[in-house]
Length: 612
Image 1: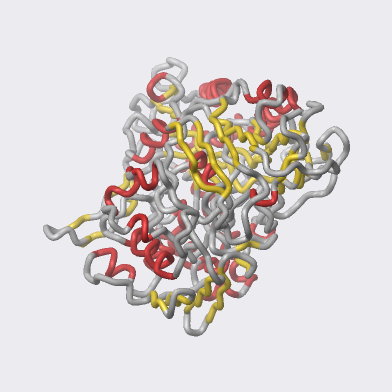
Image 2: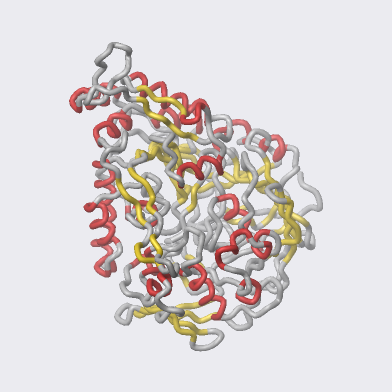
């Protein structure tokens, strides 16, 4: 299950399940690059931001030139980490760059289900609980070496190793027969994965559920170049030059050179399984959100995922075409409710107790009534309208609306009602006992709530200050953790470490193509930064992950039950559902962000030697 931690303003374009941005299109719209549905109104009576629709394919009637180099802007406020490995990368920026060099074995249809049009086909046997994978003929890595089932097995062995330092290991892997023994060191091979020959491999699962056929679900789709990495210690892989400087992939391009944290030059991969791409190469460079509009308008870059808070400044640019789609993501406010407990190992290094989240009943934010009051105190409709010009809307839950069948329509979400928020606090015993304007705890102790929010873009500071102001209006004393906004990487480092300076934080998740929430909110999920542990939550997640969920109605009902549970218990406050916008120079042809498309970067062409 691939989930990504995201920047609040500049969110990555690439969901790491195919070589390029994909998926289910939207209707063609007018010449202003977008149309607005002004009829969207919340049940509470608050007007929401209008929902803008865009094209998802950049067409061009001009003749293509031969080759050419596309200039790609990675819109980010900080350097990228440069972990070019699906097994080890941690954030959306590296994921975005790997869109050029790495590709899943499996294609995906418009409903985010695995299909048979990729580098591999598969046969699922529900009764036997097996997936049989067949690789296409003559697959090669970007260095020309054969890509075989040994590379598929190697990726599982790396992620399941006791020495693995990344975040991918979880229920999807431990559900494979023999993986847990391998992970604890009790076995030296994974008994449930069997190589038949260089092209055929079978994986046996303990339990199966519908997520197994969902992109980003139960099947890990990224082989790992064993010929390049088998001599590298797994504990050292994430920092190894083979991954940081000379990554080998199976996508349409390969890395030619890297300027650490700043830029990557890619060249065409002549060994790509679909044939060499149309472009000679791509140059990707980090560009700050504050300057990306002028850079695109001046023709310095061909493609960029644009900051939606600046939409009004570029929506009418004559040299650009805007593409857009509903994003597989949401922003949220999370409460720190416990801590992450690392795995326990014996003197031989074998895992005796797996890593897990542990709740703290005495945490400052442990009272759900306090959390609920903070949710009703903020007006996310106003934020969407004021800052995002119809490109975001108030989120009612943590399942983005693009997954329509999974969404619980009965949940109205948290709407702006400061009087209700104040009354909830009154009834829960949070009152101002010393008349300083701020409420104390029910025990009469001072209550100071530390709020962490990341820097980046023009809206980060005003939105953070807006939240603090609205919470102050209901009598809560909230201050910025560390006294200021926090840089992207440092922010997530603090979350992962359960830094005691953080009581509530503003984050964002890319869900990937699988709406299954287990990898973000399960007891064993390292990405569960709220450290929310609840027996009822685990029981509902077990339903979602059960074989009974092959019945669509059972599955959808389990998802709806989970959304209701999260609404009732408020471990996080969903804030905004998002649309994403890509600016494309008018010399570009064939760039497609339609969910489910099989055309990636290999199909992109240019019609002019220079940008417009």
